[in-house]
Image 1 (cartoon, rainbow, N blue to C red):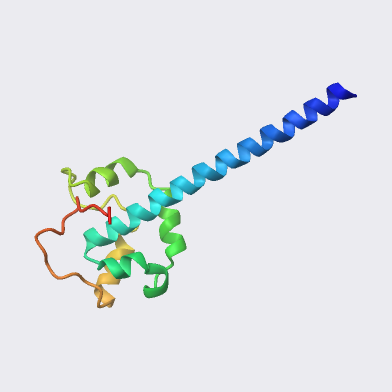
Image 2: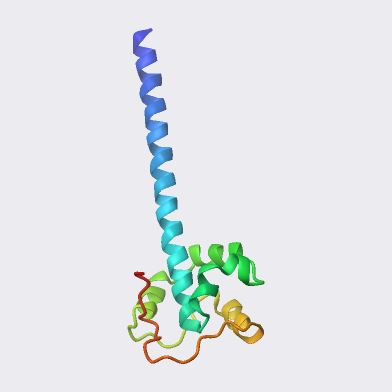
Length: 124
């Protein structure tokens, strides 16, 4: 009886550990996706206030934007582009059409600033 109870206890602890690990991984991935989306919006020319509050300020489905970003087939290309490395255009981004449409319909465009480029960091 003691042998069975100990195996059940170990199985429960293992299941809890795996759930916590999966939740932590998902949370870290969501954080990276959010950061990448904001940085990509900035490179498109969307102002920082609008990019950080896109759910409330933009008329696009941000859940779909996040889902497309999570499922992106080329996250390495995106990171290189956002870090200012030489990557031709931003056609690789699955959200490019949505961000371009936002710029055509909204007053959230940045004015040109020499410091605004794909390598802009969001450390602040």
